[in-house]
Picture 1 (tube, rainbow, N blue to C red):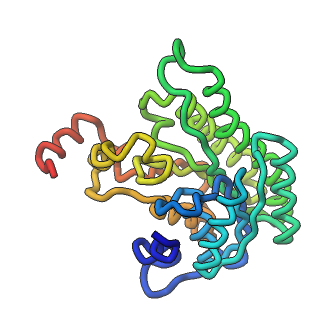
Picture 2: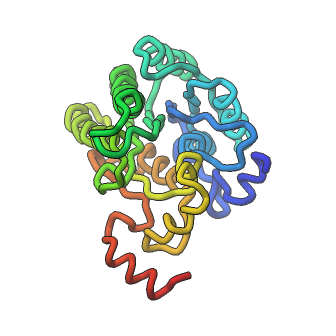
Amino acid sequence: MTNDMHFEQHPAWWRGDDPGHRLAGKRAFVTGAGTAPDDDLVGVGEAIAVLCAAQGARVAVVDIDRSRAEATLTMLKDAGGDGIVTIGDLTNIDDNQRCINETVHAFGGLDTVVNNAALPGGGGSPADVELEAWDAVMDLNLRAAFLVARHAIPHLVAAGGGSIVNISTVAASMGHGSGAYAASKAGLEALSRDWAFSHGRQNIRVNSIEIGHIHSPMGILSGDAQRDRRRRCGLLPTEGLAWDVAWPAVFFASEESRWITGVQLPVDAGTSSTGAYAISLLNDRDPE
């Protein structure tokens, strides 16, 4: 499937006749935004980068892999957007600072940060989990996001304010056996609230999006056989895609959310609003 077919199947830059320019003039830094050049499944960072650009922002596509970042940049430009690629290991403090600096140099400033880069793993019992896996997940999911904020916030202050959007998961508040992944995202949510407190008077908003069981490159790690089971954990009959996360991210980046900060928004088809017993009743009533 080509990139153009991505858009024909599930348009990235509009819902309705007016494509919109909700982020006109914004300058965004989106981490983990690369995509496999030949993959037909859109990832969350990729979708956010493309949609932000389609809505008028200039976007830095941030990834550790140049070919993946450039593939997203191609999609972004196909959608009528503008952006750059910046490559680095965000767990490395020097790479992290350099990526921010390259973005600010290219765009003349920074208004929006999306901390999306993440690694699954480190799950299961603490008696058995591999410490190397635990450390790698915590390093990217939490420490790298902290470093991005550390380096970006002075530029948001200089711009007169801005928005930080941290991508989390329902596993941060519900037991899934996710171990380090859950802990890192719960920590990121706690930092979101703390940063909202620390920088709100500088007109910097910080919010989290708690993703549910979407069909994405990370979401398929459990295998195609689990797709329908994951879908049936929600209240809605549809399966979520990366674009369903990208639209709320655009909202948090836009001035439409100018009076919202320190919140965690579940984007999960209602999974976190109910319980296992209630879901079983729904599935018994409507098994298909």
